[in-house]
Length: 447
Ligand SMILES: Cc1ncc(COP(=O)(O)O)c(C=O)c1O
Image 1 (cartoon, rainbow, N blue to C red):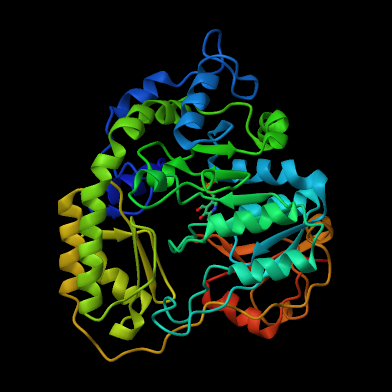
Image 2: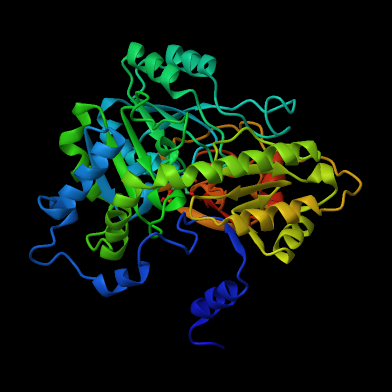
């Protein structure tokens, strides 16, 4: 067996030289010399500041980002949006027990809520029925009407928590939702992990400028920085004083300088060049979307840098469609359940987009397959998330014995990291089927 199995695997993958329609946003083509970052792997020594006591250059980097995104204060994370989400939820936890959120939430929020003793007031999304609404069978963004109803049912909520853009690239009408939340006196938190690039695209805006109280941006998902770089942006002055300590509550005391430096080095590019470079790529993707629609592809309504399409109606299952793309040197971000997410950035080359276009244009049409539905029915809740997550537990293999048991920890397929079951929920026969289809091997249940 190799003594460097991970290195070998990444080397093998890199040698395939596929066009990267997946994260990170640098696409191996960053606008600065990324190699130098590894010579700068230091720790919090004299003169280079300290992340959770930032008073020097780290604070200045954060202030640059705060000015760029229009926040009152921004906080650097070398632990992705996951750390920022943990911090946002810790900051609202003293305000109440319940958080209003869509069930199509990233598992990092569920895990943080379970640890913090916050309970979900779930909004189960509606599913698209017609191509005008979205990809048939796919969960839609939650609506203003649903949020308004949830605020009425749960007026003492600690926060409303939105995911926009979601993993598929669908977005929420944040300005209208922010107004609703302000009127109700409930802070609006936005998981903008997939939207750090939006303010640089014509006609798009950042959640902070749209009225959110706080949001997280995974810089690494869409911008040219190292994986792990993210920002917590705070607009509401009530949350600024404790924000850094809230990040420290969950973060490593050894944050990676290469990750933080990559955010610092990307800043001039974001400020001066990103918008200019993004415009032709967005135009090219728009043209491609129009062409794909003409060729019979069903596409989700997404933000400009994503193409999310359905392929079962063209006759392919996941393995077949994945094989077709990869044999045309295209690596997607996500491919499951008949849906494929392709994520471009201004660092994608026109050759990458041409590769993708050729792959999709040449796809032979086969006998349509039945669409798959994504959303299970709401299962019975037997314990709070915290009770279940902290209870004595056992790991059971997937099988009939799971039916009737209570999940102790969230179960999700990653990507997209959306929990199929959360702590405290009972596993029903329908849910078991869903877990099987998602390739889950075992579940941690309450003993
Ligand atoms: C919607 C969403 N939120 C949050 C996260 C976590 O972000 P990070 O990987 O930067 O920690 C992800 C990760 O994929 C995500 O898809």
